[in-house]
Length: 496
Image (cartoon, rainbow, N blue to C red; front, top):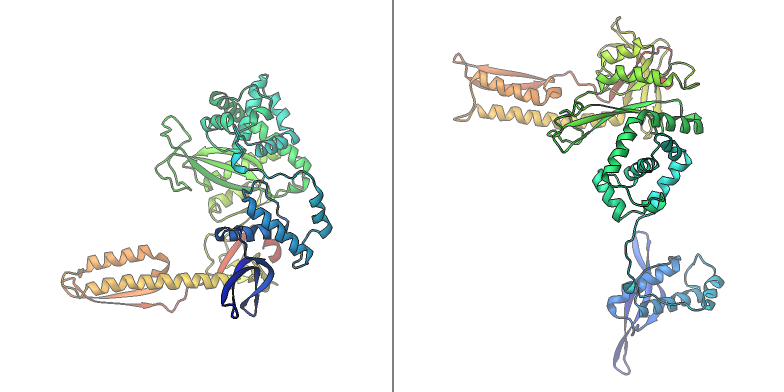
């Protein structure tokens, strides 16, 4: 909605005057049209600067939006209420509230306006998030369980406070203590005589970590008794976080590949095993320089011991579904030795393969509704016992060809720079240095350089006088990837 100024003139009296109208815009055949809703008159008691506020307030009333602390000027609110009731009486617009319900409010006695600027507050504190976290802890029995870990009731309350702080206000113990004392109502929620300081929170954190495995098992048992259908799939992933300090006395804090690009800071890695809903089943800390692939043997061992006490978790041993980053040949061998089957994305494309007997291409759509084609194949190498699912995707082909086209243009531009240097006065012309520059180009674009044949014309004094290249007729396969599986009895759709 908007307020539109309408200029009018009286030719007999020679006077010019204006009025305002409440209008709304709509679109017909890609053209914007205006529709008059109500004539507002001259609006003498509302200044031009407040017209937008008046229009918005009328629209809020029509949509049933009630403002608690709006700070609306009295003249604007009065006019908005008057025009709003005219719209209702004259049925100028559809309204979600019945007409009799609106006009019943006229009989509500003693309606007073509040000057928002006169309201003052002191020592306001957050409540909602802390209350929700406490309700969740009480509902799953975590509050009672923490009280059994220590005879010190104050320490048990500090442990619950530490957990809620990590959920509602993730920070250090120093910052959490400040937040508790100045911004949160945690003390009132937990019936504490005083908020715990940072030393008490540190002590609570140490006790929580000492009982981490017990608490994880307790929560795992509770939620998986409550949701038994979520006991079928386990997902493993590894992440890391950095420290701002030197951590010179720590054994686990090591330099490694930071996922937050903090290569100058020491890291600690966290491995977490979750169900398909992302609920944590088990977790463990590792040194910051550990790799994802090197944790596989230890994780499988711990998973077997953890799942041994979980009755009816699996009727048979599950299939390990892992990504290409973990699917090294050594890790796949470890999985086989443990008696598991696996499915993974093949780290390398098959060069020679044949279809599996009685297998034909199947056309389906992926989770983005893009058409793909799948077919069971096997490697021509007799030593390869696994089967593969060949997946052909048009969208992936378009994307990869676009990337290769861009890289080819950059690679040829690099080669053109080397060739143009041969004709310059002080350019690089010796055979050794030219080959060195070509090697750097090959190193920079390894996937594209293998598609080019480069030839040099060299004189007896090892000076290069000409350089040419030609793209091979061999075309790189695009839009195809392979899913590898050790369970040979699976069908195409089951693997997919």
